[in-house]
Length: 83
Image (cartoon, rainbow, N blue to C red):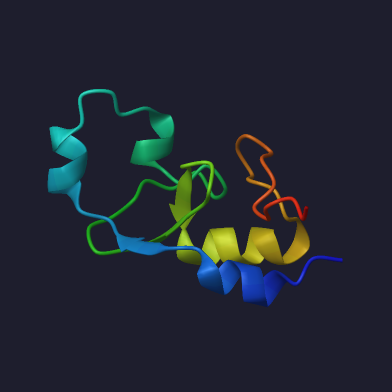
């Protein structure tokens, strides 16, 4: 079983800023809204970044990752393989 809290705590947090989104030329749906809850991001909301590059609302990502150890969008595992 995944050590969820320990792994989740290592994932970066960012603050959504619409100005940064407006500067992106290749923004897709995942940059505009959380693909877990389907709500658009609002200025100042905390986002959790995953190793695959996808971001979600912090609360949505943390809840999802507490149950599964993969990205809710692309299914990439958030834990590095142990060698």
